[in-house]
Length: 176
Image (cartoon, rainbow, N blue to C red; front, side, top):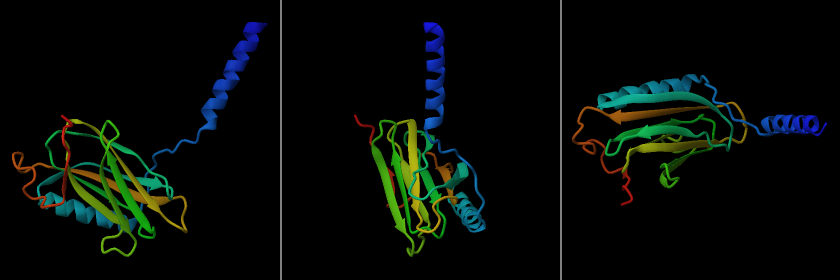
């Protein structure tokens, strides 16, 4: 009898634990304006010698980060791009290394010249996974916001990673 009670108790406890947490599921979205912006940026960066490694359209909620985990190689030049819903008022991207140190941060507001697009170059100090966390804030649409993330890697000049990046390259140290 005690074993039966224990089994029923554990089964109901595991059932409760499984349904008690809200899980944000990755779902794609479609926004024609964002698609046109993404296509323009793909063309621009490919002309600058970058190859598109990853891209995804993601459905987001206002004020909730959507983590994107990507493997990066030491010394390579990467270009990260986040395009948010044009009706949002604030856009942010934070990037963390594997040890959860913040290595990059950018914020844009509605009304900035390129307000709904955040892009930055990054050269990692180690080969490891990094997490990019885009977020957007929208006062009228709380759910169903479209976002688009892209990761490019410089491929045309492997020995000269910083050549075309100019002065806005974020370079990580290896911590040693």
